[in-house]
Length: 185
Image (cartoon, rainbow, N blue to C red; front, side):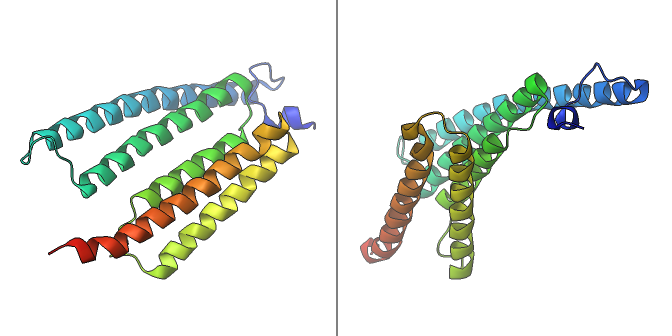
């Protein structure tokens, strides 16, 4: 059995029972795609609603750091949902799970988690473990890109961007967690 036959949910299957099962699975994936569209629209509505609600609370038109972090987290959740939708639609079109896109989605999900970390409540083990997951996913993504590179500059771009962003984020959050207690009166 070739890799193409193994990974495909072809409607042209010779076995009638398998053909019916493949149609059911494809229909289920289409239902999931529709649900993801609803989730994305609901998430966008929620982000806009929370943003406008926070702007109308006193002090007016001023967002606190916690408000910004919760909005960033909500926006990233919507972006993750969009990535999952793209995974589903690619699967419907090509009958293949794009591992690189799945890893990129997981990388975005863990990056969202890191952005909304509450460093006062988390222990160092959790932060180090999250850093290890980011590193492992970054390396995995880089290796997947290296396996089938499009262009030399594109192959290292996502890894470099991810590492730079994560280092910058850890630096900024660490700096602010040290500086903010000293600023409060």
